Image 1 (spheres, rainbow, N blue to C red):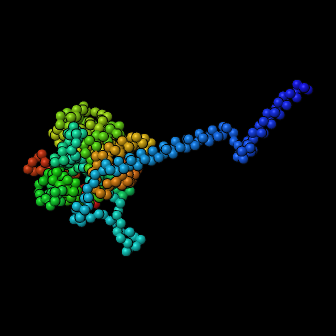
Image 2: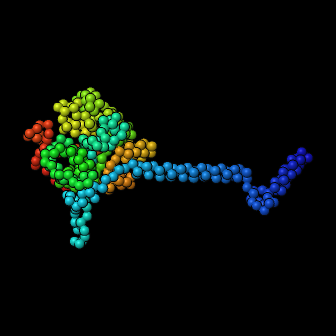
Image 3: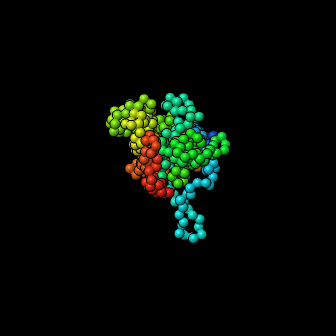
Length: 374
């Protein structure tokens, strides 16, 4: 029995000592509630983690804010609507059936003039074959028609060598240019920049351009690189010293510089035809759409930023698309548009009677095509 009472007394001493200090949830003699040491340590740890998380969120918000500002600031815009005024084709409208007094509402279809140019000076553009701002050219011109539901699109290329009646255009330096008959289509951009390019396209097609987008050489190359390249199949060998592109016939995965060379190549093709170059450009458009569709940018923020920086850093738009929010809204509206539902065509043309190196619109085919987009 004595051997059992010793430990009991010892235990009673420990209990007494604990009671003197104050047990969990009991007064500790200081008038404050006591807490176990591990709980106090965890509280301090949680507080530290909370401070770190708060700091990270603040830094993330600051970085996101800076990124948004940077991307937004990248974009250059031109007030085309202000420059051209009301002397333009009318926007297509429908009259709602709800009320005969209601104002006409837009159908929702959009026509966008997309130009590829070497208009911006800079070392990168010059290394890629671009010119300075005084030698601006638009070698690629496409009218992109998006249907009202954004379920289909038609991309119409206008050959740069098309002879057209160029209208009088407002000039960047002031005043207006004279009308010109038998002018090269791409002379409009060289003469009066985006404003004259839009006015000329509207004059030729009778179709109102709702928006304008221009991308330069280096931006296009950076975009392709940011997407991881594009895969394109060529039907013939390409050997072009001017575009610096040398490819055997077949399927190739191209980086940005090579893709730009493909978009620009002409003299490496049979006959040096601008129409053959447009066919390659249409393949490239489809390849880009497929690559964008296959790249889940929303789950890869660094790549998403790289793509956005490449696009906005080389972009000139009308004032209706001159913010990141407006561009994102347009991009989201195209999220369900599959590449297979994008039709690519070239404005119907025939060789000019007096010079086979130039072309003129083939009528009535060209007129019927433009009518379908109004």
